[in-house]
Every structure is written in structure tokens, then in C-alpha cells.
Image 1 (cartoon, one colour):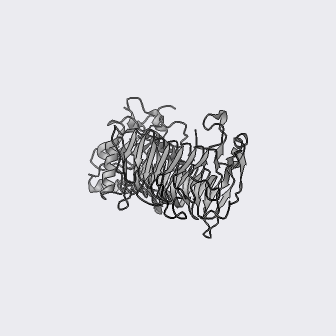
Image 2 (image 1 turned 180 degrees about the horizontal axis):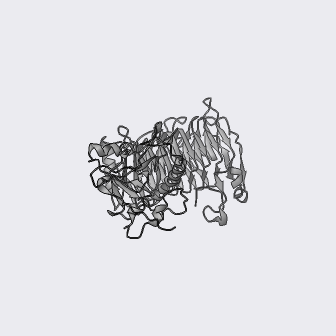
Image 3 (image 1 turned 90 degrees about the vertical axis):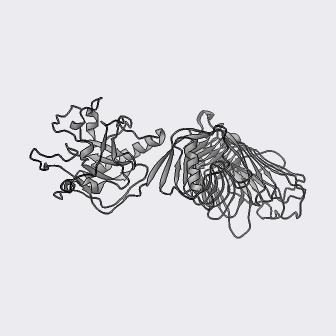
Length: 560
């Protein structure tokens, strides 16, 4: 593209900029209705606005992905030549011409950087072509006004229009005419984050914990973005982020980075986050050792209506569950009361020592109510050991559980498109343990749906006195509660066994184990058959080509 012969000079810093304020932001979709762009001087509709809107949609997506991957904005060299400062210190006469003061977002600071389109290549834009005319030394910016810029703080994108970016005076001191200022019409709603905070190290993470737990900041409407792997440097993370009184309510985006050598050594519940009402996504624990009590998870202890998306745990964990009956702990989340757990996996070895009845250990989540668990998998070995040996009442003691995906779901919960490859083992020392449970997917179902799931892992129950009528060793679910709620199992599969008491799909249909075994819409398959079921399991699955990820068994489409 040939350089254009621009003779009027670009004015920076002292004189501000004239921009088309486009109603969309990075990382947050703008809700835009009935937008019309008008010339602020003569009210002439700009017919090309749709093209500008399309450009911003493209930039929104590309810049957002770049930002999450690199932890920085794709902008030109940070120097006085590549950013523009907006200054409110103008005369009253100048303010009449300065429409941008009205249009810039309230969260903008005074710096607007030029987007570097070379860093987000592979895009096609209607405007902004002058970026490619900028020389390497940035000396000709005054002749390249057709640019897209982004605010440093709010991350709002603007389009620069016109030769002059500021207001210049003629020789006689009067304001020059012919400047084009644009504004945006009414009926615009922009749910913008109030602020963005970068988490670059352990110190930053501790600051977030302090602010949340002391009640000074919930981080609601904030996005916290991790910019690199965080090393724990031998420190223990015994106090998680968020409490029952002061939960975390923001969005924490790990941006694909992890926490290394993560350690917890606690007698209470633990995790990176304690109580979450916000969103935790794109975060992993790459290594470490976790020792904690009941209702613990490596990523989140309690999910209270929040979202846990694209997170993983590779750390080994030992949960000594002594603090609560019915207390479950897991590789990702200890307990979820509303919300979603999506595209998460556990590969750590998770072990629980039970000192209380009804306690459980699982690969992904413990007890879940009103929660959607989707596209998750477990490949870690899960073991639960009932350490108490005396039974006070054989019908109520025991009932400890070890499960691949979740311990328990209710009628408002679903487990969809999940699989387990890990070995699941439940060991009980109770002489009259009425119902020890080991299951590949789910421990207990109180009326929820389990769809498009499969199990390959070995399922084992070690007990003092084996009673097939009360032992729930099952590939899909340990047992259903008979409380008037129908539990559904749709399109579920497992690898068959050839032993005398071979593995079944679902354990007993009654709490006391006297009602036999529940039927299931699902099938036992030979390993060779199950390896070819990706298309049958649905669109969330794909083949494990060359057996590179999952020994040839179907994998989820997001796995790489």
C-alpha cells in the first residue's frame, strides 16, 4: 500500500483526539441496540458505521485472545510516539468542539495506544489501513490518522478519524474549522469491567487473598489476569482466597498459566480459592502436595453459584476428613451449590482418610447441587479409606464413597460428557459397613441426569465382610436414592469384566441396599468396542488418534 501524502500534522498530548467511540470492549461483549452514529456538528448519519462495527467485532476477538495468551495488549512500542494523551484542561471555547470528552468511557485513563495489527495477523479490516504506512521510527504518525487505538486501562477500542487528532488554532488565534467529531447514539449498554488487575507473582496473589478475606474487596466486576506461572517457593497456601463471610466474586483468569509446587498443610478445608461466587478459569496446578480436611478442592473449596472453567489439577492430595459428616473432597472442587464446572480435569492421586460416616473423595467435585458438570475427566487414582472400625449402628455407619467424577448430585444437577480413566478404590475397616461405594462416575444420585459418560478405570471395594446386596461397586453410579426422584442414565458405557461378581452399571436402587440393582440405559463394552464409540457418545467427543492422549479411548473435543 502506497504512503499517502498527508500534509497536516498529527497533534498529541496537549490537544486530545477526535475519535469514533465504538461501543464494544475487550473480554466483555457489549450489548448494543439501535446504535446510530451521527456527525456531532451537522447530524448527518454515517453510512459506513456497520463496517466500523464489524471491524471492532474482529478486533475484540483477536485482541482478547492475544491478551489472554500473552498477558499484554498487542500495541505498538510503548513510547511518547505511540500513545496519545487526552487532556481535559481546555478552554471553554475548545470544549465546545471536544465531543470526545463526552464519548470516552468513564474508566478510560489518559493513554490510548495504537493497536499493532502485525501482532494479530490474519484479520481483514475495513478501516485502520494507515497502520501499515507507519515507518519504523514512528516519525510519520501525523500523516497516518486512519488507526485503531485502545485505552490502556479500560481496554476500550476507538477508531481515529480525520487528519487532525486535536484542535489547532489559526494564525489569528481562532479555532480552525473542518474538524470532524463523531459521537454514538443512545440506547447503548456496556457491561464493562471496572478494573483489570494483573497477577504476576505470589505477592500479587497474596494481596488478592488479603483484600478478599478482610472484606475490603470482593473483586466483583473485576478481572484478575495471571501473566506467568506462579512459583510457591516452598510456601504453604493454608489460607485460601474467599470465606463464607467474604467470598470471592470476581473473575480470575489464569490465561493458561499454572501454579507450581503448590502446597497446603492444613487441618481445615483448603484450595487456591475458599468460597467462590465468581468465575475461575484457565488455571492449573502443575505440581505440589495438598493435605487438608473435608470440603476441599485443589482449585476451589466451595463453589457457591460460581463457574469453574478450563482448570486442572496435577498435584497429589491427602484429605483427612475429620471435620464434618457428609464431607466430600475432590481434585478440583470440594462442594458446589449452584453454578457450572466445565472442561476441567484431574490427574493427581487423590486419597482420603475417613473418620466420619458418609464422607467421600472424588476426582472432580464432591457434593453438587444445582450444578452442571460438563466435559470433565479424571485420570488420577482415587482412594478412600474408612479408618474407624467400630460400628454403632450398622444401618447408619459407614457409607463412605470413592468416585471418579462426583460424589452426589440432585434433581437440578447434571453430569454430561464426562469420563473416568482412573482406578477407584474404597477400603472400609467397619465390620458392619452397610454400603461402601466405589463408582467410576458418580457416588449417589438423588434424581439428576448422567448423560454421554463412560468409565474405563478399575473399580474396587475392600471390606471386612463382603455383601453384594450392600456393596455398591459400579461403573457409572453407586446408588440411587428412593426419595421420589427418578435418576436418569442416558448413553453411558463402561468396560466389561469377566469375574464372577462382575462390574455393574448402577448399584442398588434403595438406600438400605435391599432393592437390588437399578437398570441403566448404557452398555458394557469390550475395550476395542469402547475405543470406537466417539461418534456414539456425541459431538463433545472425538477419536484419540494414534492413541496419543487416552490409550485410544474417546477424548473430549477441547483436549489437545
